[in-house]
Length: 201
Ligand code: GAR
Picture: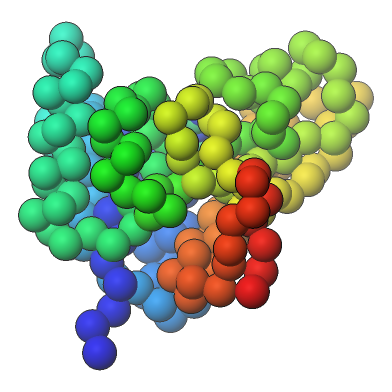
């Protein structure tokens, strides 16, 4: 039986992509990586994906029309028969048309306990707000930013001497764990969505 095919979209460093790849290679995630895509041709993550011999594609998004750009990305994912799309530090707001093409097949990870601190610089927002606990969230993507039904969250303490960097790296460690867990859960398909709640079946 053929394994489900992942499409990973990234814009930068790619550490979540690398964690997912490790878990695909060691069999924790029962899937194959069909395509790694970046909207930034010089992203470190896409260099790494190339080094690993994965199928890669890039289209520079700078200055591109949003609807046209997302159509091209969706076409690439479809051409590569992607079953599940994982946003891994993909710093773009997707068009509704794109999102609707991948119902319950589009995941994102965000470095806060949503619905707190959506958008950019979530760890900075958490420090500024003075929360004592933060973390990360894996969620289905809907048409609003950082807003779809939540699959998994992990918490970390915010320490008195934390900087954006120290808090980010504590959260990142959890991101690397929890994203793979959520991906495998979705691939197994033993969930149902009731309203905003994603429940195990
Ligand atoms: C991660 O912290 C991820 O949660 C965040 O970008 C970083 C990417 O790191 N994503 C968002 O803020 C999305 N709103 P990585 O490139 O090393 O995986």
